[in-house]
Image 1 (cartoon, rainbow, N blue to C red):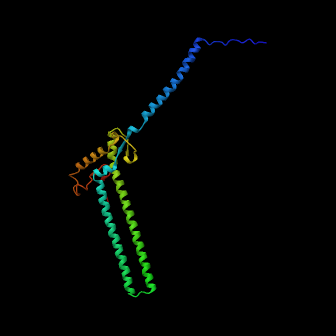
Image 2 (cartoon, rainbow, N blue to C red):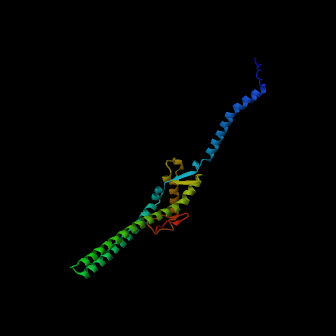
Image 3 (cartoon, one colour):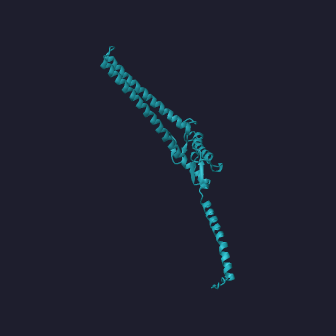
Length: 221
C-alpha cells in the first residue's frame, strides 16, 4: 500500500521575509552589544587617571636626600661614641679586676677573667646590633616623613593634569612621558622653597628643605 504523501505547505511570503530578517539581525545585534560593551569598558578604563612620579629624583633635586644622609650620619656618629664609651667602661672593669688579682693568676681567677671578657664581647655585639637597628629605623622614619610631605604636592599636580591616582616609578613597569609628573612636582617644591627664603635661613642652602604642604618644615630628627 502506498501512502499518499502530502506536499509540504509553503510558508507565506511574509513569513519567509520575517524569518530572514530575524536571522540577519541576530549577528548584528550580537556585534552591536559587543561593541557597546567595549566602548563602555574603554570609557571606564582608569589608565588615563594615573600619574607617575620618581621619588628618588624628587628627593635628590629638592635636597631631601642630602638632608636625610646628613641626619643619619649624625646619628651614626652618636652611636659610635656610645659604643666606644661602652668598650672603654668594660675595658676599665676588666683591668680593675685583673689588677686586683695581680700578675700571678690561679686557674679560678683566669677563668673569671675569661668569662668576663666573653660577657663584654657579647655586650658589645648586642650594642652594635642595636645601633644598626636604630639607624635602619630612623632611615625608614625619615623616608615616611618625606613621602608624607611630598604626597599633597604630587596629588595637587596630578589633579591639575586631570589625574586622580599617583603611583611611584617603582610600581610601574613602563609608562609614557605624558603621565610622568616628577619634574612638575620638583618645580612646585622649588617654588615653595623660593617663597620661604625670607623666613628660613638657619641652615646652609644645600641642606635646607623649606616648608611643605601638609607636613610643615622637613626637619629630620
